[in-house]
Structure formats: C-alpha cells, structure tokens
Length: 322
Image (cartoon, rainbow, N blue to C red; front, side, top):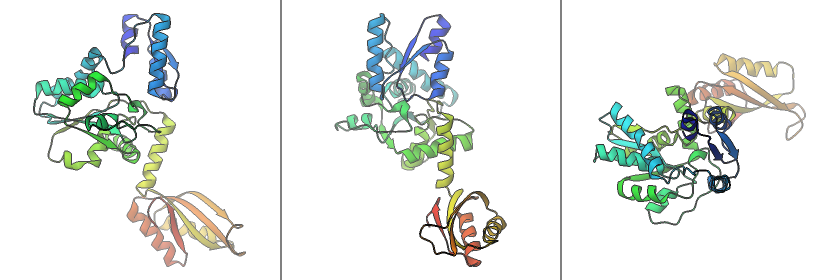
C-alpha cells in the first residue's frame, strides 16, 4: 500500500522486508517504484533495520500497524464490507501487529455496535490472544502465515482490541493450508497464509459462527507459486486424493502390468512407481511403492479391495490411514 500510493504521488519510498518475504510481494512492491531492502529473519529484525535506514537517510518512518493513521486506513476494509453486506453480524480479521483488527473494530462497531469482531492468529504467534488473556507472550517458529508472524503487538492496537474485540482465536498450520486450498478450489481465489486464517478459524471453530452472517477479511494473496503448489499437493494427500500404496509382488515378468491393470480398472491413475529388490525382501520378490491419484478416501478403499481380491498384500503408506 505504501509503495502504491507513494508511486502515485511521486514520493520515493523505501520498504524494508524480512528476508523470507515471498518473491511475488517483493516484485509487486518494486513494480510500484519502491526500493526494497530485504533484511532480517523476523518482522522485528526488519523493523529495526527500517528504523536505522529512516534515521540514517532522514526518511519519514511509517509504522506498519502502530500508527493511528494506518489503523484508520485499514478500518476502511470494514466500512466497505458493511457497505456491500449491511447485515453482517460477525467480522473475522487476521491479526499480526493488530493494526488491521483495530481499524476494522473501530469502524465496524461504530456502524453496528452489536457486531462481533473476532481476530485470528497462527498458533505459533498468538501474541494478541495471550496479552488479552493476561499471559506472557511466547511466540516463534516457522509458519506459512508469515505476514502475521508478529511477536510485538502495537500499543495502540492492543488498547483498541481490549475495548472492542470480542475474541481472538488461534489456528494451526494444517488448518491454514486447508483454507488456502479451499479458497483456490472453491472460490478460485489465491490467498496467502495470513489471508487464509479467517477461513481456517471458521472451519476450526464452527461453534462461534453457526447461524451468523460472517464476513472474512482475506488480507493478502502474496504466496510463492512453489509453496502454493506444495500446499495443494499436501491437501490432496490429506484428502485421500493422492495415496501411496506398498505391495509385495513376485520378481517375474508381467507382475507390474498386473498391478497397473487392477489399479486402472478400479479407476485409479498411477503417477509414480518405485520398486526395490535389495532391502528387506526375499530373493524372488520385489517391494513396489505406487503413488495413485484417486477420487476420494472411499475410492482408496475400492483400490485396496481390488488388489487384495487378486491376492496382493497391500498397505497404505501415505494419504489415508492404513
């Protein structure tokens, strides 16, 4: 946002980002004419570098979340959502440093005092939830929601959250991955990890949303294509739509074709075959690992039944429970 508006106004902008920032976000920021500095393994380290650069080069420092003007700007998200869907009664907002949920809470509760505002953090960075509960903050580790991997909540957002936020939920990595995959598969929308946390919370905590008109803030779509591909493939494995089977077959001509015929006849699509004759098998046997695309978990059961009915001993290695 800073890079975009600085470019429109002809103002030079320097944006400091952590070294792990997705390449797509870095490229888009540079495309708006900003200078990008990549430094630090955390958002806190990047913020320290931003302060140093601002002081050394006599630049105006724009805090990403602990600034009333930034908070007010982010609050326009809630204004636009309520303009489009006036009967919303619950708003779910990703929480990093707290600026977005603070702005959305002020705007939404100003228009609809009874509207519930719920925040969502990744489980490894639950600083807002911990602070609101009076707990000490313990945060760290890798997360796919790197855009909200913040340990230090802003003082102004925290004060607003204490007054206006109803609840803050935490979601784990698997839930976030599922939400990314669902956004793409169902809504045809690319969401980054941080942006998908709202849907992850909706699925993980249905008791807080049942019967309510819920608005989810999808806060970003900056996710590297390689990571997105990995998330989608892992989702297929979890859903049983990609499965790896292990069989023991005789080391003789035609055995592999027999297995392939059974799997194909049952509607499975073989994507990879690995076989080995040296480790842990008898001299005239081969261990065969077959990776198969399937329709769903029930279809996996059909494949197992087809192979077992023809005399093969088979077990599931990955994808669904054996």
